[in-house]
Length: 286
Image 1 (cartoon, rainbow, N blue to C red):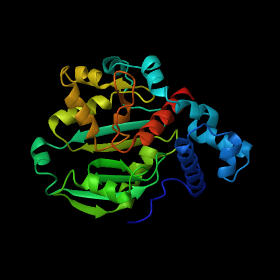
Image 2: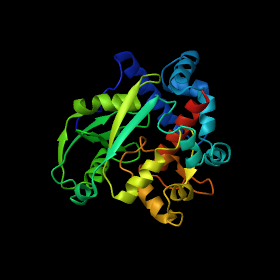
Image 3: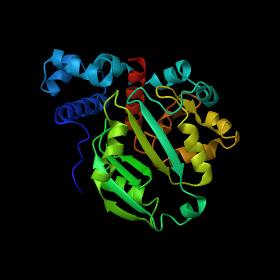
Image 4: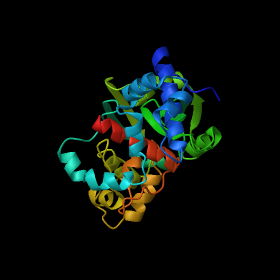
């Protein structure tokens, strides 16, 4: 496999890697890390590191670590719970503070889905993301898969995504995907439009569409999603569909929590889910 592709300018690319290492270090720590400790680990002065971190994440390292506290999920659910109907009615769907992301999407027909990707060419490549190495896959119509390898091997991530469409032809071509990846994970303020191509069963696509109505920095529950799609008793089936979401982050399954406020599971590892939620919350309050 090729190395992860750069998605920013050379200077921003260096800072991107520094911030990714810093976020990984924060997430792996059992206790909050001091500014001096973080700056030393990044070979920077505390003042320089604090300024750079705040520029990229939107808040200070101390504030960011507060978002990773064990009670963060419950606080989100208590203070920022937004029903899907209210979010949609307020016109909040589709745009996130992180990168002014505008997602447009279309879905594969049920008949094509039943053929498990037969006749479909899927391009793939590895990229850096704020949440670790990202395997991105896409067709001519848009991104159809994103997986994260921070908590698993790249081989496992590749096997996981390709198993979803076993009859497709896979072609490594990161440059074809690069503009879409840049718009998805690019710097804040950049106008972006990321096309998605949803490959799933009709019920799954209904659930994924509901997920895309949740604003960045907010969360919902499986039962609320079931209500939103008109199947209030299908909470378990909704949970399964959320877990089978192939386009992590852009279809924000990480924003679905248990009714108790617990994080629940996450296909690519709970540390990744916690980091994404903290990242979005920090940006929402920046």
